Image (cartoon, rainbow, N blue to C red; front, side):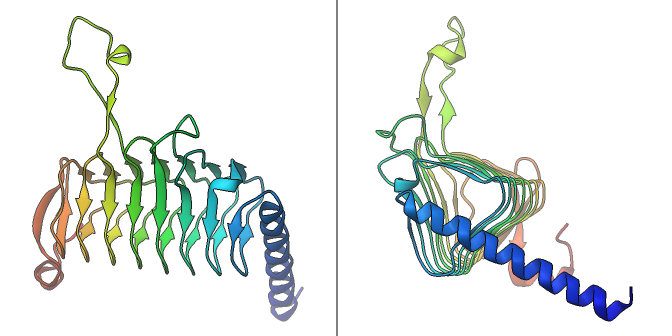
Length: 223
């Protein structure tokens, strides 16, 4: 088979795949989700409580994702935002949960993300870029009493905020109570335990600020 025919077949395959995504997106609308135009859902993606799910125009959720939207505030996704395959997202165990997940316009979440949005919830702004296999945990276990099992001591939660124009590198972990300021960058593999100021670059375990974006770019020192 010549190159021209291969290109043609690839285009046909992509076109059919997109049509199937839109059909699955329409089925989710029928189940009670509030979604905009050109909303697509990948193969074997599962939604729990779709009535608590809202998305804007030109949104795609990739293959093999799991979204548990069960909370009063649920899951909200802005316009022109896409989520790659194998997302695991949970807003909490009951519909009375305070958890929620929100991401704005023109944003992207890479494959294999784990987003625990129960408890304090997670809010992301516009133009946010999330790398592959990033973890978010918006609650923490209480463990002060060494004489009692940790699982019996309850949880604490403050929530996570990711402001506009943030880039979070692959395999980073963002913990409860963190605010990542506008324009900041989190290096790959970082563990963020404290808030990061706007336009800062933070790397390492635990994450430490190594400079501002312009400074780090000039020195080419970002991992």
